[in-house]
Length: 234
Image (cartoon, rainbow, N blue to C red):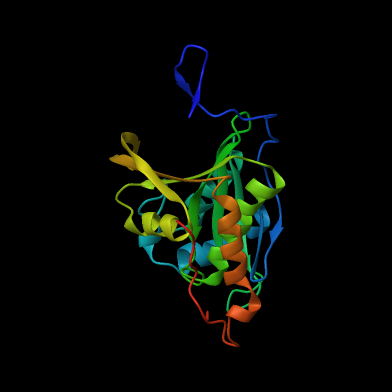
């Protein structure tokens, strides 16, 4: 542990650190999907994927929804694109029943270029791609962009502490649990305790290797079923 001239413990030096480029809209391509900035041309696909073809439970832990008509959904999508500091993206599968169509949303948000930290959130995956290789690879290419392309130090995931599915997903994707921020938010007229998770740049190289091995085409049979499960370090 490092100490200062007074014998007090201090954080490790970060040699040569410079603020990073802010995280913004970007197109990222994987073997099974493409991640691209949310635009007006995606609304038809997203309304079908997230409203018509998905159960209303999809929206329980999101800030809006569930939706029964189109106009409020369009307002929600527009708000994502106009919220300062948010960079909403859509997930477009390259194969399967919704190939070539936007089937989910994932956003970069609350970026801090000075500290090299950004969060992934606002996640809504249509029923057609839930628990699929598409969503896992989309999360991978988004974190790879943050660490490898932009050189960030920290990647965050936060969710309602009662959202068991989101907490399990964070752990499965390699995020580490950091704790609960009690009474952090009020949304939909109810309290939210927020669970915090993160991945740091020190953890990233081992995670990247594991992801790349799992995503290799040889790990999947002709029907797209995995031969071995994703096994991440830590």
